[in-house]
Amino acid sequence: MKHEGVTVMQGMNEIEQQLMQEWENSPLNNACERMVSHPETSVLARVTLLADRHGNPKLRYWFGQSRVDCSTFATLTCPETRCPKRLALLNQWKVKAMGERPAHSPKPVDTGTRESTLAREVVIEIDGVSYMAREAVFTLHLKCPQQAHSTVQVRLTGWDLFSPTGNCLAGGWDGEKPHLQTLEDVKTWLEQHLAELA
Image 1 (tube, helix red, strand yellow):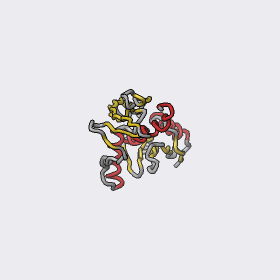
Image 2 (cartoon, helix red, strand yellow):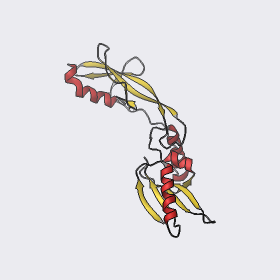
Image 3 (cartoon, rainbow, N blue to C red):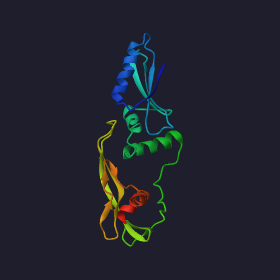
Image 4 (cartoon, rainbow, N blue to C red):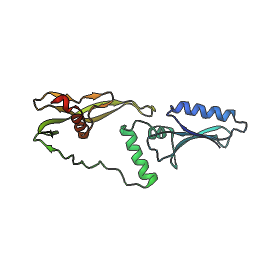
């Protein structure tokens, strides 16, 4: 079997076309294979092309030791780690193929800040000055880079930061993610801009 190294993320059509060319150019129509890069670095993902019992080329898709269909493979190898379809399918695969327990939502982490009386607002004190971090919710429409499924809507949370007088200092949307994603990001931003705020 001809064995190729891990590819830079390519479209499935391109990978399949390359395998077909290799297979056709092989004098004995030897089986060939492509490794596919994806976020789960501990799992080997590959596409193989070999002759079926009639001598015709047949594509097969493998995620770890599991043989999957093309659509499942495209979803599992999608580079978009925020995709809820990819995460749900990956969780199912880990339970069935790896025997892992189903993943649950992570428990809230103690941030060491004191929460105000308003929901989703956190007071952060630095050098005796109280700043207000307010949670913000953003809606992102994710298009699957692998075209394995239709566009999905994802709700992402971030933080907006306000001065003691109520002026917005930082936050909002930064390309495809919140500018301040966590309270640690808020604290880091404050520490880096403290001189400007004084």
